[in-house]
Image (cartoon, rainbow, N blue to C red; front, side):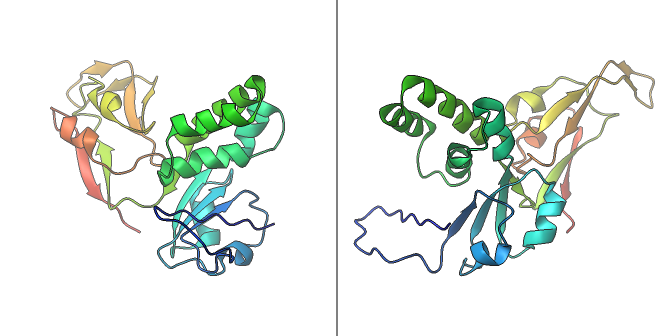
Length: 212
């Protein structure tokens, strides 16, 4: 099933189908890619419901398009106990392409459904909004130098995504300094914004060019 949505700041009078979309949202990843890639502009965006890794998704979709992924099925099953992924994909869409705010979507849900159903779907939208990730769009990435890191966690505080995380594994530096944990980067969520690099006072985060 294909559905079309046109968005514009000015009135839209055409009711024709969209032949060359800017964005494609794929709810069912089992659909043959030729169906949803048809007509997509060269600089277009694909937002796909998938539990696969970034490398697996890229091996299917290639390097021609911008790609974002979210395991919407897992979120829906966890919250609704049913694989109804519509609202999860809405959450992913508005994070990647800010066509609407979280607040406006939540308001629309409560205006459309009963409180119980709206509350559940609001949970789904928010989780999807938080967890959707862009695939391979950085030009540079942060690499933490464990021997220089003081574990102040300022990088973790300023990171706008859940990309900086803590590993409960003791670490001893070359100089003999001991720490109870290490700080790492999850590149599935890292946008390459560089905020952690700027914030790091001991200069313990290298800014490394991505190699494709």
